[in-house]
Image (cartoon, rainbow, N blue to C red; front, side, top):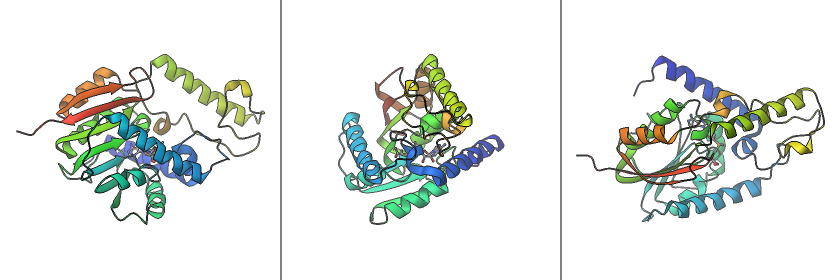
Length: 265
Ligand SMILES: C[S@@+](CC[C@H](N)C(=O)[O-])C[C@H]1O[C@@H](n2cnc3c(N)ncnc32)[C@H](O)[C@@H]1O
């Protein structure tokens, strides 16, 4: 599939953002759980395992272990590693060259893992019917615009084999909740710009102290991402010939979707 001009520009903007952020502090921008300046690699990888196991179980899918799997938005491979232990062959795809460089370095001991740098807008680097399972966590929530998220979902349908599963997370939070999160990001930036002490009452866990480097650009379109409504989700799944089997977390930032590729005729 050839990128049209608008997609190419958006893809380049996303790539530029995530390349910069992964060079700045990859672990923080993957998981903002710990404060910006207190990253702990051991904990980072431990949580990659815990979360992967948690979501594979929650998916309710009966796997054989023989599946060929795509980890869409793999980052440093935090979850790809655990997927590689469970499945025959795992591909990690990410828009950022730098994330993929870090992932290759971190998972060089994993013989059944391949990495690809994507264009940020589709899965053009993969042929039709390549995967038995597509997994994605905290990636589609960063995609700037529901139309682009829908494009990724249509692509999942294309690259899945008949009967294959997609299990992925999207942001379905109510607009008021999203606005609150954006307001908090803006306050963070303001406090940093003014070099004020971090106000504990903001619930600020990820804030470095005054004058210390901290998170930035949290309001950038490639980070802020977008919300997908249930209707937009269902439309994309229908286009992709994906049957939605289960939705968990409607109305929240973590809407998990289990969908199955219908047989091609
Ligand atoms: C928050 S991190 C999550 C990484 C991984 N899923 C994990 O939980 O460890 C989001 C990842 O998605 C990638 N990403 C963001 N937008 C993307 C896009 N449009 N296409 C592919 N990857 C994207 C980023 O480069 C980043 O590595």
